[in-house]
Every structure is written in C-alpha cells, then in structure tokens.
Image 1 (cartoon, rainbow, N blue to C red):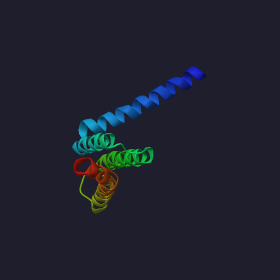
Image 2: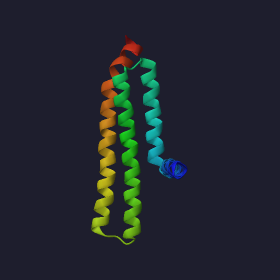
Image 3: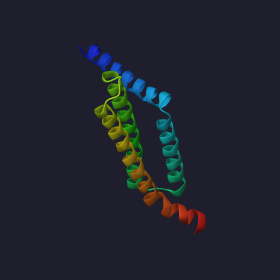
Length: 125
C-alpha cells in the first residue's frame, strides 16, 4: 500500500512539474514574469531584505505566476469548449487576463514599497 501511495505522489509531482514546464515553455509573459521575479530577488539579496520582506516578495512573485498559469488554463479550456467566437468566451478570457494584470500591478507596488527605499540608500545614501 505504501509503495502505491509513493508512486502516486511521485506521479503527482511529475504532472505538476510538467505543468510548470509547459507554462514556461509556451507562455512568453510567464517567462517575462520569472525574469522580473529573479531581478527582484537579486536586488533583494543585494539590499539585504528581512525575512518578512522576503516572504512578501516570494508570495507576490508566486501569486503572479499562479494567476498566469490559471489564465493559460482558462484560455485553453475556453478554446476547447467554444472554438467559435462567443461573447461569454471572450469575457471569460478577458477576465482571467485582467486578474493577471491586477496581480502584476500589485507586484510592482509591492516591489517599489519594499525594494525602493533600501535600493535608494545603496545607490545614493
């Protein structure tokens, strides 16, 4: 029983990593978001963020990527269910994209609030 459970857990992780890999391989915006997240982490390491600041930065980066993945999943499901144009299909896709936009704007605000003050001190202080 334990071996079967272990195989199922390993398989679940495999599928999850396959999903992340699919997102990064096929979605340009996800790759841009990862690049910006890495940049924020590099700046954070340089300015010496606190543990709490790291937690907020990590959560914010994860939130944007999670929503990007969900947006991609919604778009794929809508395209599968409704190959022809339909107002509700458009609204579903627009809504999912809008949520990514809101999270991205919030991540810029979080990054500015957390990173800008110590970065300013490092550069000009």
